[in-house]
Length: 258
Image (cartoon, rainbow, N blue to C red; front, top):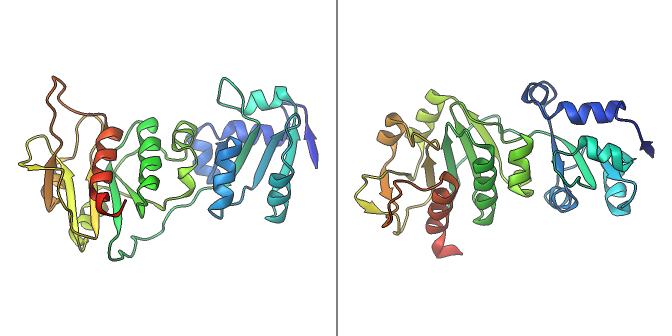
């Protein structure tokens, strides 16, 4: 097994390059950091193409797993781990994985819960939403229109490993509108002026549609939602953080089964 001590090593250069969306798009790879996150990937059937471990805290079980899956495993000095980590306190484990995207719109099963997000810009919000979606056993996430990259480091870190749990699909605005039109169950969005309270029963399969952080749902997708609900607020604020609002909605939709 290779031991890396130089930041000029090809593996180090590759990992550092994946901080840029351009290189993630070209290689279709992304980075995940942390032993617990990598262990979650293993549990969910993913395998790294590259696994870099601190030589100060080796993990024989991860080394054996990576090797058994045909991945390239190396140890690195503390200086190298600091060079490849995006965190102030460098992780002792960094994995490089192939991105996974659904190639076609999903087959919708009875009882399914999917989440459609329109023009999401904040990777921290998106990562938190992905983590919450896994917590309620959502079936997948659809990104409609221009969106931040779910495989960006900030987003992957915010998911705490949930990036490995949920199918992801990208649709442009027209494709997203067609998907809402074809949804066989209830499509529900949030709107400040909606008459219905969000605390109610939802028909399955359910598609929750949430809009961007600043503008909310576009008028077109708002019109295509079969139901609109509001999250009441008694204080002075006009809106909730997108990840918070999405979390409230997901838990309410799943309330009977949790």
